[in-house]
Image 1 (cartoon, one colour):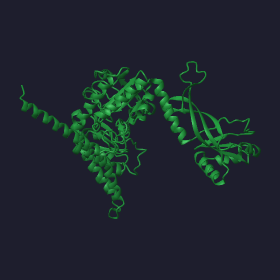
Image 2 (cartoon, one colour; image 1 turned 180 degrees about the vertical axis):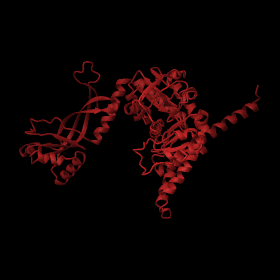
Image 3 (tube, helix red, strand yellow; image 1 turned 180 degrees about the horizontal axis):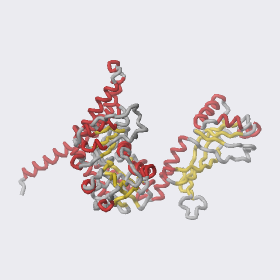
Image 4 (cartoon, one colour; image 1 turned 135 degrees about the vertical axis):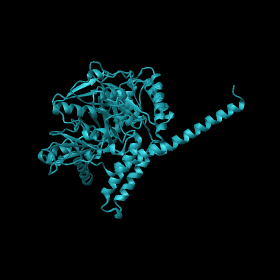
Length: 555
């Protein structure tokens, strides 16, 4: 049994540890952009740019504009490439000579796939869990070369039937290290071991793995590994990495046949290093920013801390979600930083839009109907609490109220911007439009084209008249048709300067507007400025037979 002194000492150590932990997290968050302004749960798509990356980019801009570096920009690009490759090699345990800097994960995948000399009847094996960065190039192989595509099944326990899928025609295995849709860590070690017994190379898509779980390409014994810089590594866009195992570099050739060879002579001897396949050079700023961000992750954040923290917060958010009635978590136990789920009390799109409205950025996985959040090493428990509170709030309010609030929020923003409002009805008994050939609604300006006689009638509308406006706008953000009745103050513009300004605004949004007016043969037209003052949201989507309108909100 611990003495009182031992208990006090233990508690002091715990408090000191908590304080150091808090200080470290605060230091990490200070090294990222905008993390205190919003809850950013979307590193799986685009991570928060590190301050180290921003500084490196600005530094390179200064160098490029410095007179003493005149004529040396290409040399600086070469130096930055070497520096960044060395940092990347530390991250994934490779040799710098095995690294190619690409423009994206997809770029690296294409480089590998199209380095093969494909023949009709050749075969590629992949999975049903892939991102379009894998699916599209694989489908193009089928379309362009007649390559067959086979799919291996991987269950939630990590069991795979790939051994039974391999044939004498199998040329390449391509799959994700971590599933983009659920965060599931796929059994790539076992797959590589099985496949290599048949001397078949493996290409891994590491977009959701690098920066999330430890990656050792040598231990994996993988042949090709592609990943991006802008997701979990907090680098800029337009930069990625392709690792090619040194032992197979001689088998990796540019996809150029003799007839298409851009060089004017034969017998080219390519360098032995993998950079001979640098199909395009990424931007100097992206290269330096990426290298600086990875170096910051390695030296200041510490990757062991980052990996442990992501696992800890990932388990926390999945456990908290599983406690909410009506929520189904589809992410399995063996997962990386992504968590995907759906709710039976609201549709996925509305749920995600509501989160965004509350200052929390996640994303949907359209093909599967999931909401996906990405927790990273810089998040706090308080941010997860906020997320869970919002989910509970949605559940309490229910589908109809949340849907109504989303529409109100969307239409309010839409009306405040007064863009592209098309005036459909006007009281034609009081203000007859004898020969209207159409109307154009831009930035609150509605244009009626008519005869001179009609223009006089329309111009009787005064600034205090209220005109009913009914228009239908497809609100894609909430995947529904929304009908809105909007009442506004309509003013006919008579001032020449204001009228000319309105025509300029309309023309910028509607190219050819003036030509259409001239071609109509109508010399006079009225321009009406509409200022919204009242909105009614009318929704018939809940009406089972689709007839009639239910007014569900008014403000």
